[in-house]
Length: 69
Image: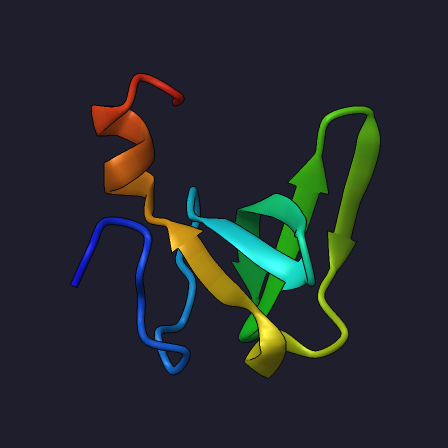
């Protein structure tokens, strides 16, 4: 599996970069009562309406290794 290729069933964790719509990414900032909250630069945090549709693009660990966190 290449870096960035994560199974669809992988549940995102805090700090993971996810794709929540085709080509649109955000970072998981919190998980409250099982609901991930996302944030993008210049936009307030928001709860995900369909958490099962999130795709992990990079884990928190991968972001740290890349110097992006």
